[in-house]
Length: 460
Image (spheres, helix red, strand yellow):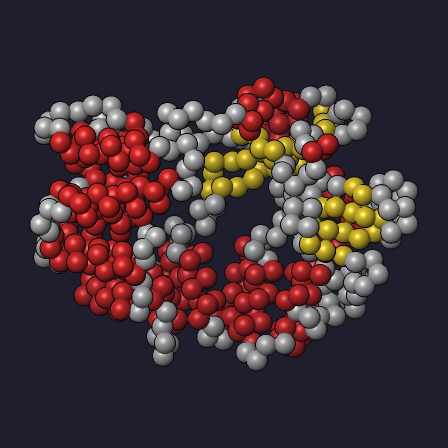
């Protein structure tokens, strides 16, 4: 796991320091992570007295990585073995850097993990390399070859997001391996059904896909029931359109997962609009309040009560009339993207779909540092997402004690030497990575962090 910075405590002079990922990467030549942080004691040491006798911590999670007094050393390279690695491989006499360099045999990995099955040990090793896709996939494939169902699911999730046909084929094969086991999980059944339905990596077969969705629903997958409900509601994939049956499936999915917003919203709007069920204003309003409250939980700027009032007003407005109702529009736009029955019709009366959100490159505060260091280190964030759909970090810029700035990529590659201003450092990082990174001025940045959004500043 990549780290933002580490905390070092010198056992000789008791000095506490927070070397950042940029500074450490320039010393080590590799990104700062759970694995490379073990080298900080020798490569960086104490910034006050220069001693190498230091304890190293993950500053953000406050967990020990290297204890100068207790941490054992690798028998191959004689570097400390990180404590997070030893927690998963308690019998290891080797470090993860030697594993990455292919200096350790599979038999040693299995023995160090102490598990009964080799697949579990290989999967645990794959988790150690979450930030290195090549290594992670290598160990996941070893676990899949041993029949580990969890590894099959994880490998399928990674490869199914690829546009490469060979990756999709391997993903479908991994899901099928897990689904063919005696007690298949509902998740892999659903994922295999989704790929089979659209012929992604496996021959399309609508009938088998629908049976898999049904089996996943019987095994406890509310998502599978929701998908089936949408197919039946719209009459897709050879299924007869049946709104009443769709309502029954949405209701079952909501009962299985009461905190699922989409199922709750579907039940609410179908009750309110009389879609596939006799209208029930009281019950529909109760479900709508629950759905909106779930939506608003992670959106503190969202006014749930105002949204419910606006949805009710929209329902009573005549067909063809429109008005700009911001809260209802924000909520309905979100659930309409998931095919919730009735959402699009109400959204049109609220002013239509929201314009697509345009993510931008920004700088974000390095929260792991103590207050006196904040403002000196900034991550350069990217709207581009990786294969798992997660936003990526391009690198960081940092102000040194001499008031000059340095830039380092997320891969631990230094950009140039030092820069006079933060803007110069950001622009140099953007140029090196061949991307356009607009500069965010300090006043705008601090205002974003300190001010609370206004009520009408709705999420997009």
